[in-house]
Image (cartoon, rainbow, N blue to C red; front, top):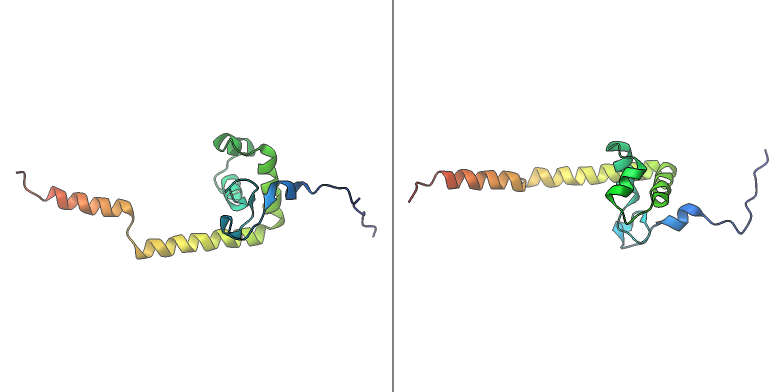
Length: 119
């Protein structure tokens, strides 16, 4: 089987748009120059059904090329990124289980305020 050899002057396109840096975006892959993580792009595309164009319309500081690079990175590292998403979801559920939401707190406060007799 012949494997094509890449010329040494090839510019890696995904690396031009996607970075991973310790201490930035939690060390997760993100669009360079932004705090938008690859996993956010993947969620918007895969789970929210947003098109790459609509993602750019919602976040006009990023380009269509950056969105497509993020999706390419996601598909090449899908298992890792899906694990990160699941870990984040589990963390949110843990927080929710331990604390009432601000909406629940407001409902309770309003219910107590309603029990006061007028002046």
